[in-house]
Image 1 (cartoon, one colour):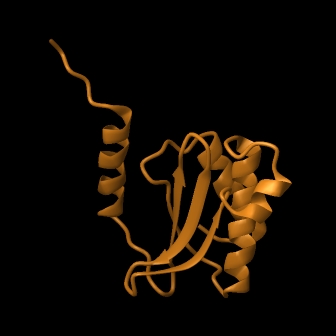
Image 2 (spheres, helix red, strand yellow):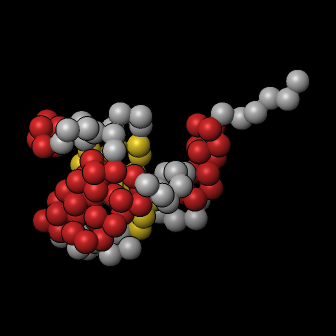
Image 3 (cartoon, one colour):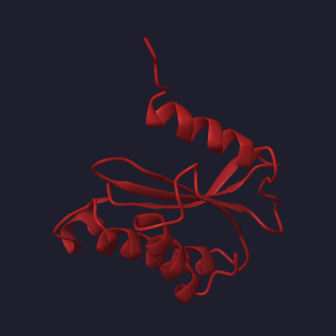
Length: 122
């Protein structure tokens, strides 16, 4: 019988391959994105200091009350705009984008484009 790897295992392998290629620094931290079936999360991380500098997600109460759904492209672009604004307030203008093994399509692309429009460079 042929066994097939689960999509989650494949995504984790892709993520680890890309994480071996780059890391966030103090000058250029990493914008890490994760999406579940119900929510989308984004955080800006300095890997050298092992600190999360800025975070935004659809789990937050303020974000939930502004959105009808927390798992669609509209919610992803809202989180992208929010993470971009919070990063600029923290003095971060340039990041490395870590899509977390997900395809650059749909929600992930919407979040990235909204963060770019908010002022982040990557």
